[in-house]
Image (cartoon, rainbow, N blue to C red; front, side):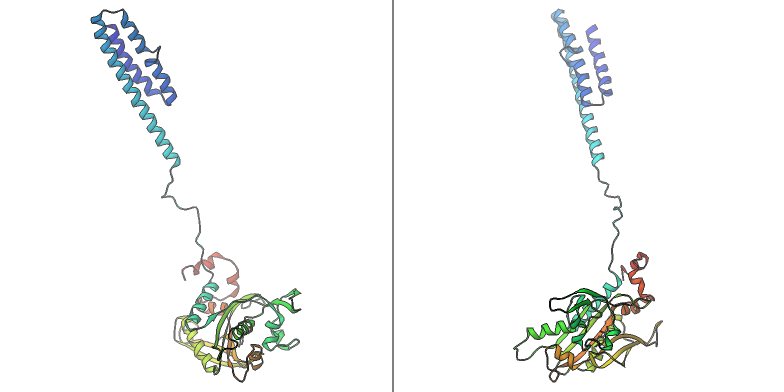
Length: 352
Ligand code: DAH
């Protein structure tokens, strides 16, 4: 009888001890205390040897039941510990997908770049090519080819930054003062490409990019952006310039109530030369003439420098400031805001 009670008590003890084991190793130690070679259950079984067959059967059955119950309790605790380990690991390795990202702030395009892209798209839609060229230009292409020979007073209109080294042909190098040298580069390449052809397709191109001058105030920056326009054919006139530029302005400002006027001016590379002024017929700037571009009919000397006969080919050119157009489009008062890197200013254009 004692043994049966002992066996039942052992089950209770085992359950209790297994429950306090926090690790698999502790649990295996506890198991040995009951089921191991010198364990409590094993000892009870050994003691059976001394009993009568009848008592052996009875008590043996009780001990085996206890043994099974302890094995079950052991397995149950093993499962619990394994489950706890798994949960702990899952918790440790968990990625909280509901958490905000780590401050990856969204960038946006600079307002000048937005205008640049719009200008390209608008002129492409009118059949113009888009060309880009070097910001470090040689003296001949920036000035001489555009009919501003050395020592010509017109050069002083555009003071710039010179580079100390000359190019391979001994030409002084400088930061280009305008995009106009792209007229020369593009036209010469175009002429070369169509050499020997029965007739040359018109040159119709815009060339946007950075330009440099020794200038700095509310409306001038030492680095600024222009886009050059050039259309050369057999009978391209100032009337075509007016039509083209009007269509461009309507598209750029997304409104039709814009008037244009050509005001006589002087540029060495055009004859006649004009300033293009525009005015809005409504809105805050209503009625004010705003100067937006230099333009003119390309000078015969420049046409000759393209490699073309000015008796055969004629056309117009213009050079406009991208900042200026951007300021008018968004109502920006000070050019320097474009270059201040102030996010409060720049972020306003992210969704523009
Ligand atoms: N290159 C001139 C400037 O930067 C602008 C200009 C005027 C360009 C007349 C032209 C033009 O193509 O025809 O001031």
